[in-house]
Image 1 (spheres, rainbow, N blue to C red):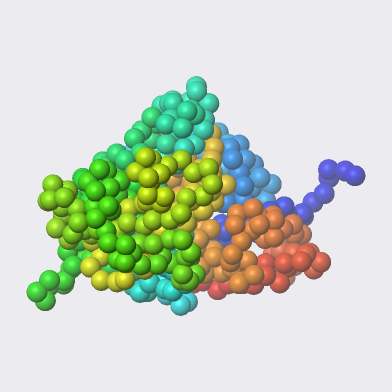
Image 2: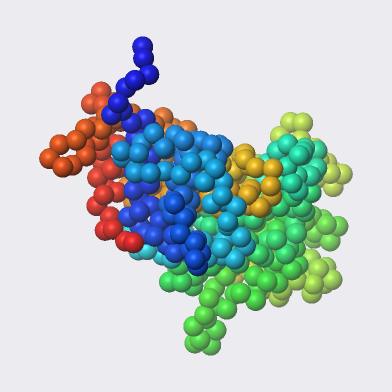
Length: 458
């Protein structure tokens, strides 16, 4: 065994990710967004950000991991060193980050136009929502970090770290927007929800903003957020064209809600649906809007509906006195959707739970570890995480064959991104040769072919 091999490329599948960024125009847009007057860097900053995102996609967890790309100079060309990558992140001031967000939105509009069958429809209870409805899921998560990191703080889960808030597009699995927050940031801070949702809506291409559904758990059930969404909801009225913004957010079980539940006739409850659209045993739903006390109804928008779900508690569940008395566990949510069966609307709301999978995947792609002690660098790192999530989603939408589309990051790396290859030269061309014995070599070649077929956009 020796370490003197040449022409061998590790993580060859990552080349397709970087190539995808070039093909759809992300690299060029980021280069424009990060340009500074009078400063000509040795490494283009847009290219550095794409390389960092490519590295994160392949499993990198620290800025120094960019060295995994530097050995591929014959394939990728010059790649920035870790100190240069650190400086590139340090240059992402709030003003530059806004331009980077605009570059992402511009690229996203082109990607959505390139999707062969159009933007996928979000699925609920075994059926697809209308194809023109864009579903945005907002949620926060705890990321544990060391105490010496700037703005790290004690969390409500008795840990120590950060408490980022992010929005995912359920249709495409893209991470549209995220904001880094100290660990003690509130779970239901309306200002943070409004900020990140505003950024996320700006990421949705203009042609797809006419019908949107915003979903949040109980942490998003605040007056300010619902009022803000109500203002955004300019659905067509009296023949005027406008934007329809529906919401489905958790609603607290207060005493007024408990009183309304007690007034529901036994034969009014209807069966709930499971994720496949089948009847869910020992679970019922009902709308209680008209039974709520006037003080509650008048405090919220007039078009808001409150729907309650009850379910037999699992063994060992912690119940309130009200739930223990009735023998059910209750959950409530609010929505401004006027039409649709109550059971379907409740199943649509519970589909928000998919955001937990999105968070888990994001933590496997850079969100689970912030590499710097400086808060500003970690904020920039969160932008790199968003870029990596975009590239992974776009790879799935535009290039991956069916056998690889369902892969989560770990499996995608194992099967494609980390495939080795040999680089050969001939007839003035470079040839990346994947091993013929690799179990997924056909899928890997198909992915490369699909990426190279995308018309180049600078």
